[in-house]
Length: 469
Length: 85
Image (cartoon, rainbow over all chains, first blue to last red; front, side):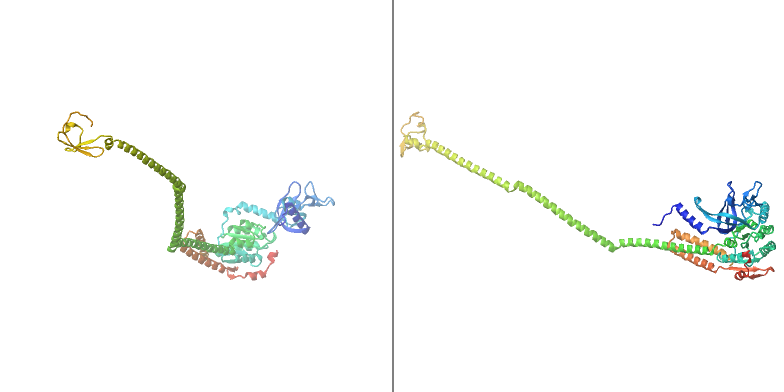
């Protein structure tokens, strides 16, 4: 786990480093953002091409005390300063500042605490500059409306500059790395000194007269305000204003803004920047090409991959529909069906067995051994009953027979014969003779007595001689 | 490098961007996509060649109106006073 700083902790650490590393320094730069709050302290920045440094000039360090009528005096020596820099310091002045670096924690900025501030150069030029600027502005030289756009990729560029020196070299060096190739024609001139303004104007006129270039570039390397002065002249400003070609200026360092810059159609900060303004960086073009190429490759790869995926999907679908697969699927379904069938059969058989067992059980309950015994016993009982009934029946009949025999005995005709009765049969009819009238004298009679028979002949008949003989 | 070439470079780049966008959309048929890709790659190669061939041709226009070639490296050696000033 890395150490996590509190803001104040980190600021304190930075402050320690800065204040110990740079206890006292001299810095040269151009003054900007001068601010004079009521406290009497002076706040401004000094800057150069690439950087800006905040400066605070505390009242106590400004040298002497302010006098009522202006100016300052040294309270110790009584020396009076006619014109203190603290009073005249304005934006654009070039100064040398001596002091110590410090960190202003509340805003997290570092700044130079000035102890000595000295002007470099002179304020006269500044005033001239301001006057010309005001004049040209009034004439409409700086109007945005009249600024012309640059051709997008100029192939023919006229460069008005000194043929030797940093400016043209920087411009060419950067130009080589940019764009897609172009022709550069240098119109040489002095860019510094008394003759410079005239030289610049003449070179520009030649470039225009050649009627060759698409754009005119006016460049000069960095230098002091005096060095750059040709670009703050009315002649050069007029030539730029009158140029039928669009004009790009790149004069001095980034902070240097000349009248020429203000009149130009496009102001580049430096000669290097002028080349950058004219042409896009070739590396960027290459990178753009690379991007496009990579995009193409990526896209086509994705396209192919997508189609491949689709093909795979279709192939899988097709395989799924193939006869072999179908057979396999059917076999599987068949096996499954068979399994289910077997299972169902077993279940069915189980069911049958269960039903059989249940039926058997019911049967057993109804006609089972226990029940049969009961029935047998019942049957036995009935047999017994039948047998005894039969017996009684026979006995009864025997008795009745005996009775009947007895009665029959009573009715035996033989019996009365024993007791003296006889039985007469009329032979002629063969019938038992019950009435005397039935006979005639002379009829033969068969008379049965107890012992033996008698044959007789009727001699006489008497009526009603006894009814029941 | 002539102006005609520059225009064609611009057009090529524009064309290339259109192709890349179309291909990126991914809704082109495969054959069309491959054809676009080939076309795009050909443009990339052509543009790259043009960039590689790109040169800054430098000349110096003399006071007499003559135009002569200019050697910036030699000019460097000639003077640095301007920078020091």
